[in-house]
Length: 335
Image 1 (spheres, rainbow, N blue to C red):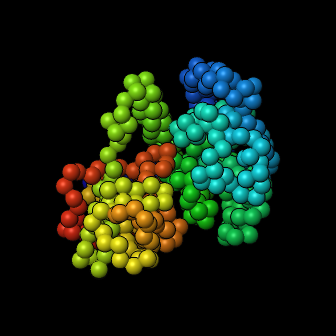
Image 2 (image 1 turned 45 degrees about the horizontal axis):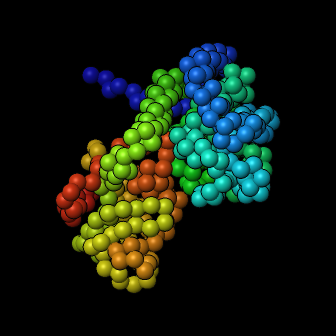
Image 3 (image 1 turned 45 degrees about the vertical axis):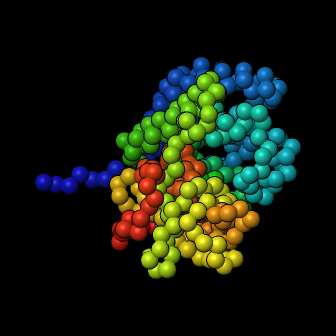
C-alpha cells in the first residue's frame, strides 16, 4: 500500500493568478465572518484609548515594494516609536494600551490585515511583514535573508504560529527560506488557519470566562507541562514545578554552585521529548533559579513547549500529581 504523502506548508505558488484569486476570495469571506467582532473591538478601543483605533505603518512586500500594513493599535505610540527605531519590540516592554495585551496575546490585533490581503499586498500565508530598517540590519547578519521577498508576506505562517516573539531572527529566516522554496499547499494552509482560529478562540474564551465568572485563576489555568532537569549524565532528575520567562522553581534541586549547566526536558503527548540546554543561577528564594538559554534552538524549545508563548500551543503532556522519575528520560529525545 502506497504511503500517504505528508502535507506541508509552502510559499511558492504554481500559478500566481489562481493563488491571488484564492487569497482574495478567502480573505473576503473571513472579513465578512469576523466583521461583527471587528466592530466590537473597535468600539472597545474607542472607549479605552480614544479615536486612534488603527495602526498603519510601512512594511516591505514582494520584491521589497513598500506598502502600509493595518492593525489594531495596541501600543503607546510614542514609547513604541522610541523602543523600535532599529529593532523589534523587546519582550516585557509593558507599553500596551488597556486592551493591547489581550489583543496581542490572542493575535486579534492582526485581523485588519485581511484588508491588506484583499488589496493584494499580502497573502494569507507567508513570511511575517518586516520594516525596511529591520531588513537592512538582518540582511547583513543572516545569510540569504532577502529570499523572503520572493513571495508576498503573510497574515499567518509557521513562524507566526509556532515561534514565540523572543525566537531569534536567524532561526525564523532559516524556516522562511525553506518554505519559500516549497510549493504552496492549499490543504496545508487551511489546516494551519483552522488550528490558529481554534487556538485564538480557546485562549480568548478562557480569558473571557475568568473575567465573567471572577473565578480563582487556578481553577481555569491549564496544568503545567511535564518537564524536568537532567543532571549527572542522566543519573538525577529534578521535577520543575513552575517556569516563566526568567525563573523556574525546582524544589528538589540543591542550590549547588552559582552557575550550573543542565538539560531541560519537556514530554509530548506522543511520548516524545524536547530538550533545551540552560544555565541556572541561584536566587534568594528557596528552590527558585534564574535561567538562561544556551542557544537559539533552546530558546525556541522553551518558548514553544515549556511556556506555550505561541499562537498554536504544542501538544505536551500535562504534569500529574506524581513527580517525574528518571525512567522517563528515553533515547527518543530530539531537539
